Amino acid sequence: MKVGIDKIGFYTPNKFVDMVDLAKARDVDPGKFLIGIGQNKMAVADKSQDAVSMAINATSEYIDKIELDKLGLLVFGTESSVDQSKSASLFVKKALNLPKNIRTFELKEACFGLTAAIMTAIDYVKAHEDKTAIVIGSDIARYGVATPGEVTQGAGSISLLIKKDSSIMEINSETSMYSDDIDDFWRPNNFKCALVDGKYSTNVYLDFFKHCFEDYTQKQNLKTSDFEALLFHLPFTKMGQKALKLAIEGQDPETTARLLDKFVAGATYGKEVGNIYTASLYMSLLSLLEVDQPKAGSLIGLFSYGSGAMAEFFTGRLVDGYEKQLAPEKHKEMLEKRQKLTVAEYEEVFNESLKDLAESQEVQSDANGWYFAGTSNNIRKYSRK
Image (cartoon, rainbow, N blue to C red; front, top):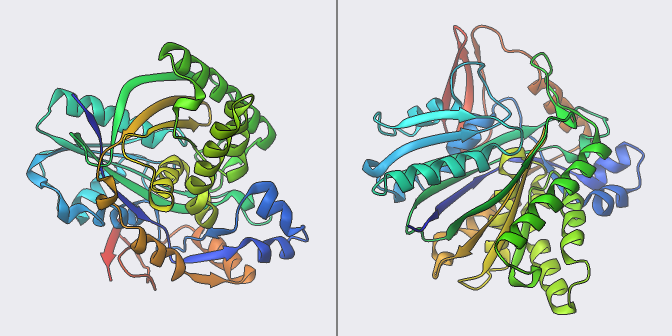
């Protein structure tokens, strides 16, 4: 049975800070951010935007186009959870008035969460071939103002519909996995921002990629040249570039040029949005499909990594006519219409978003779509403009 991605929704908040402005404010050569890290802009979530509101907006993009009576599973992968007990997926389910007779829960393993959700959904659909599944990755990457990791922050969500005979990409069943208990990135319960050992995390990421990629290609009897594109979890663009360099070392000029070009296309959205944790790899997939439009039948390799650490390499093939399922103009407009913040405005928005809410507090939003509206007796509320 062929199972894969049938729909893709994408959302990022309506505010951003420019990396040149941020570099100047931090007394850093802009080239360090633009080239050394590989970022142009960074999405900024205000207090009206959280993982749930972004997930609702991403899923809203296609929800009217699917058969809700066939939906059987909703899984939300995130490391920006809004409740220590209640699943973020239940807020999405209520907002979008999804059927009550579906299985729904939240998954966490750092940036690997959406991949875990996808693999769970594929197994579910294979066991219930008349059913479909929605999987969501939604996160706000926070390291703090004027910290070493500040430039690798961001916010956004990707939502996918998984079904049999999918219309965008069929996901192959073979995968290669690698995991270990390490401390490269983590966020204790009492911390609002993540802790990270940047150099160590980069080294582990590259080591895990080598293990997974070599294992997969050997077992599947594939060469690097067999891939139309290789996509990566992108906490920042340069990290994926380093992994790609390992894959293309010693390859022929045509293969090297092609994979480099596809990587650039896949990093386009990420350079404008920043790190969105669980959804970063799949924002890269969407970016590749909408910016480059590879030919149908292309073999795409995907490397997923979640700190702590869990990694998996798998592949998919693009389905004929997949372009009809995409919305490049809508996504281009969303990115272009965002409000540019000064560095001072960004710092104010960022610090305000870290404050604990009162037991009952109303929150307003200047963004269209769904937003976090505040609390009532410590119960979170979501509204739509």
